Amino acid sequence: MMRFIAAMAVLTGLLMGSAQAQQQPIKIKLSHVVADSTPKGMASLKFKELAEQRLPGKVVVEVFPNSQLFGDAKEMEALLLNDVQIIAPSLSKFDKFTKKLQVFDLPFLFDDIAAIDRFQKGKIGQELLRSIASKGYTGLGYWHNGMKQFSASKPLIKPEDAKGLKFRIQASDVLEAQFRALNANPQKMAFAEVYQALQTGVVDGQENTWSNIYSQKYQEVQKYMTESNHGVIDYMVVANTKFWTGLPADVRKVLEQAMVEATKYGNDLAESINAGDKKKIEATGSVQLTVLTKAQAAEWRKAMLPVYKQFESQIGKDLIDAALASNKSS
Ligand code: LMR
Image (cartoon, rainbow, N blue to C red; front, side, top):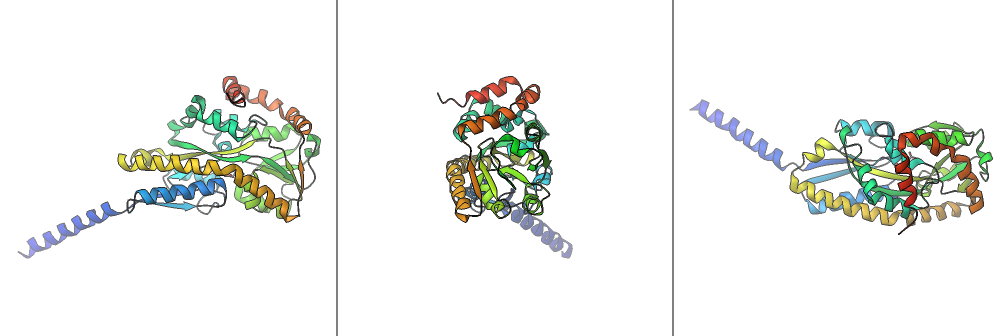
């Protein structure tokens, strides 16, 4: 009898344990490297809000901004290990997985975010979203940030002004070639290290969007900025494929819809956030801002143009032409 009671107690314990385990919400860690106030930060928080609202008690989304959980180098690895389930690296950071995504880094390729949006929503853009599926990453969408601007320890007006300066770049061979074309010295560096590198003179300048520049306070350590719109920082939101496809189908469906809406929310806000942050930088009064004229921008474009030929065989001419064609809205 005693044995029977003990066996029942163990069984009940097991059943309760498994019922409890079933009730545990699915935890999704979403990690990124920028501030909550940026377009990527806002889209991440929107995804959390929508997912938890629509799947109460079933899903918890933990957002880790500012490289808190993983910095640039680690987040891709961590995603594959399922230590984090969703990340949104800039498109520049995928070049070890596919050379095709390098297209986004070509200088002066897209006129504006509207052109990028058209390209990403088109057939080729959607194919690119699936281009790293075989590596274990499921592309969930593109998030916008904005056009890149320069900052430096001296005014950058003509391409020759960049000569000899050390620039921080993201981990991208195209960006490296872009600065080499200017006879400058590019240095690949994680985003979290840039402020200090600028402050201590490890590098003299950098390129980024207004929202990243302002939220990282580069205006405290860079006296000169140039509005050049010479490139873009946009993101691919990616999930660990095993995790994502292993979700119950009904849960995944709701999360996919939450992602669609969070994407639209962030993308609709991106341009106004960047424009607002540019104004805030100007309002500090500590930065001398040059806005390139069309003729000046054409000089920079000309100096950087050799990069296209250099990467044409890796990226594919078709892809470059399709991206260029997206500049004309039809
Ligand atoms: C950078 O490294 O400069 C950016 O990719 C950071 C980001 O995620 O916007």
